[in-house]
Length: 160
Image (cartoon, rainbow, N blue to C red; front, side, top):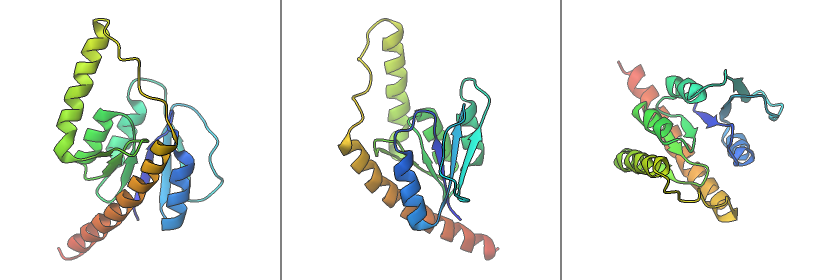
């Protein structure tokens, strides 16, 4: 079964993830540095990891695989998840792909350098209704791709 992993600490679209997962019969694993309220459903799991840089990211990256979906704003986690064959989305509905992840990593490095030398961008735009709508559409598409990928992976491992 495909899983949806959520880098959950600051994720604004958890309710949307639950709705789509329920509709498709998928499990959701939220990974966070602290406890948070989740639906009392057997298909929802909250994993609380110790605080620290990238601990939640490492937990997800070690487990995500082909046929899973990862929800994150973290570009290095998106890259690591893509390497493992997962579908990856940001909470704004941006789909990370193998073709664009290199550019995204480079842009992240440039932005970090500019912040270090005091040139700020003011941060991301506020999260809005259009972002939520775009995310829902992108999640539906990612889930369909992940389910197909999981089925192909399952068939190829059975034929070996």
